[in-house]
Each structure stands twice: as structure tokens, then as C-alpha cells.
Length: 57
Length: 136
Image 1: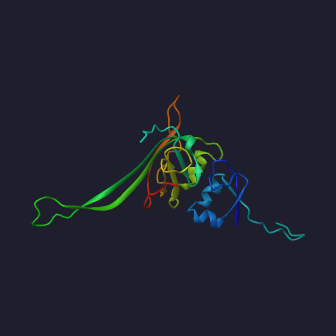
Image 2: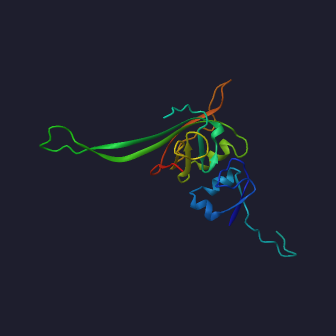
Image 3: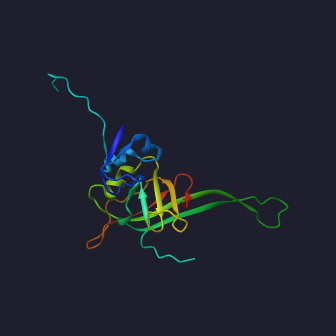
């Protein structure tokens, strides 16, 4: 699981906005990932399963 | 040693740099004093007990994306979060120590102020565990 840094004021090592960080790195730093996503500092790079052809919602 | 006037203190909360929206920071450590006086003593005797740490911050409220409210509000009631405080900018050194700790965001004032005043939030958060001081 990885995340993309979305804000300039999120400080994580030498990384900057647009860089990717892993869940493991964030957890090891003791950070609250849900709060960072909610606050607009990170976005999840989780893959979404494509719908099968002909599938309907 | 040079005295210091605080003009550039550095504060990150959950790794988010909110320094430009903070006007005051106070990091406090107190130690319990446990009395050990017993019969035969001619004066009270004491030993050091547990440390109790807290941080007090004064924020300038900002509801913009990725700013103060967006960063702090999701932390209310959550597990303790990483906080770093430095006296003068982001570069840690012998003369600019980094104080790292986990604080419980147990208090927040989303809206505070009167007409014509700056919207601010002044909070004191208890620290979960010890404060680590780094010089490099």
C-alpha cells in the first residue's frame, strides 16, 4: 500500500509533494495515516478492481 | 551562549509543518516528587517520581485545504500523534535541538474569536510517554 504526498507542508524525510510513501514508512514514523488522508496531505494509491465487461452496479 | 528570541520556531504535528500558523509554543516537563520520610528522619526526604509532559500551542485558525483545521480535526480522539518542536527552523543541530514526542490531541477549539479579532485556538495537549531530544 502506498500514498502520494499531496501537500507542501507534509514533512517526511527528503520527500516532497508528488512523491510516494509506503504505509510501512508512515506507520514506522508513528503517523496517523487516516488523519493525513482526511486532511488532504496524502492520497491513497490503492488499486481499484476494474469492473468486468458487461457488469452493472 | 547566545540568548534566543523566538522568531522561527518549527512545529510539526503528524509530520505536517504548521509553524507558519503557530504563534506560541510551550513544552513543559514536571516530575513527581515522592516523599520517603520515615521515622528517625529529622527532615523530609524525597525521591524523583514519574515525569509528566505536555505541550501548549497557540494556533492561527485556517480552514483552507491541508492547513490547520484540516490537519488537527481528524486527530481529535485518535491515538497519540507524533509532534516535533525545534526552537529555530527545521535543521536539527547542537544549538537547535529537536524535541520529539507523541501528543494526545485531547483539546481543540475549531472556532474562537470575537468581531475584529484573529481566529485562534489555544490548546494544551498531554504527552504520551517521554520526550526525545536530538542534537543532530
